[in-house]
Length: 115
Image (cartoon, rainbow, N blue to C red; front, side):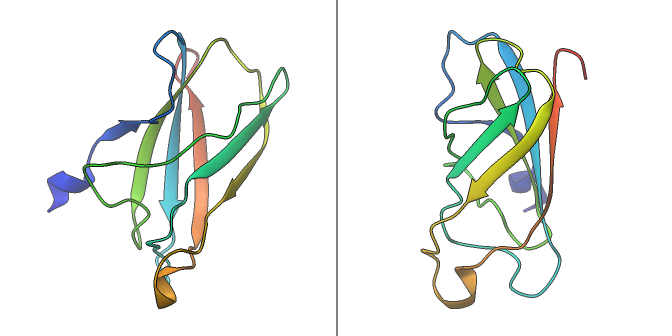
């Protein structure tokens, strides 16, 4: 079961011609009902030099955003976007009952070219 949780997932809307990469590490909290079955499918990153279009989180091979989970994604963009100013992230509340909400603990965004 632990092996199923490992790995880095490329975002499904990455463009194959993009040559600049960011790693996005998402930490879901440990509280009861922290995880979600809702679609956390939208995020937008605003940097000094530019901002991303709305991007999608998904992984067809494993469950993501589970209680206490750490999920890692690769986002590709055409060029460096500069320093990160803020992130907008939202979900659709489509999960059943207590699985509709989500406790996002924090996110790390890492420029893979400069670390």
